[in-house]
Length: 339
Image 1 (cartoon, one colour):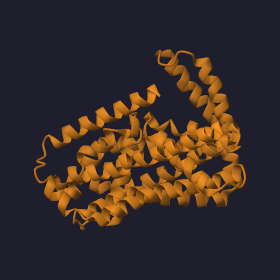
Image 2 (tube, one colour):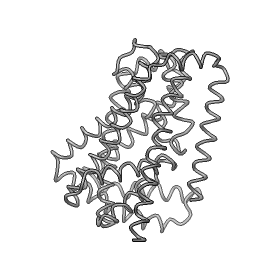
Image 3 (cartoon, one colour):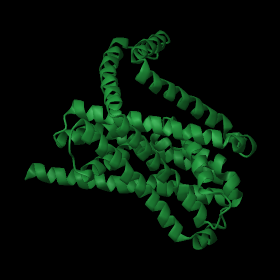
Image 4 (cartoon, helix red, strand yellow):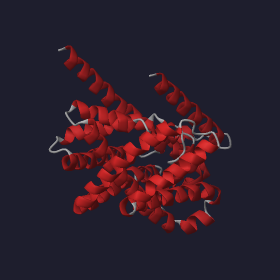
């Protein structure tokens, strides 16, 4: 509970500071006029895109659970996915979601080893999908980055490099899994040598357990190639829903020069640049990346307002809705225990 409060405070402070820095050079006297002229129908579609992200997240989780465990109700998977998104949104590197999801699965008679295997399968599928998606969009928008968004280029290149490393790591997992442990051990020893990692034996023990899950997950994916391709496609559809939120924000402000592909591509670059920043909800990095990359499309007069609308829908609405689902689930479980 204390960690959650700290994470939330960090997220809030960084977000407020970022918005103060961004708005310091922007005249917001036109904000009341912008509010009255915003098309609320398009904003509703933006919210629907957010809901689409949840629907497909639940669908992917349900299909993987059926493969590893057996038949399970879709709405149970959807609930677990939504609650996982809440904890991911309030923890650095989105690390809080998976442990909670394993716990929730255990309450539905899915053992902890199987729950861990399900979520690691989902993690692999997601990483492959988001990496391929982002890399394709990076290549599509290369000229845009060099001509219209030079200030964001270093951050996008760092994100691009990390995504390439992730993709390389996934390929190694599939074709040379025996190479992974020596590479990780080399990194551990280096971190131990420079006094960043103290108790190296503890981490080696965790690595052995993680390698077991890796090998089991890879085997499951290899055994179900057709289903894995379907899962990759569904995850890419999920990403498209999420990245489309900005497109409807764009339309709500009366703009129509950029296409849906343009907006989705640039939004994926924002995600790529910010996803590895270790703040809850990538606070600060997401706002900064959005401002730098979308400024040429929204113009100076509208970019801050667009940023606020996007962040309210894609992050704060997400926290409120998924938080309510988490609270309701907690209350219902408590009632069952008492009964």
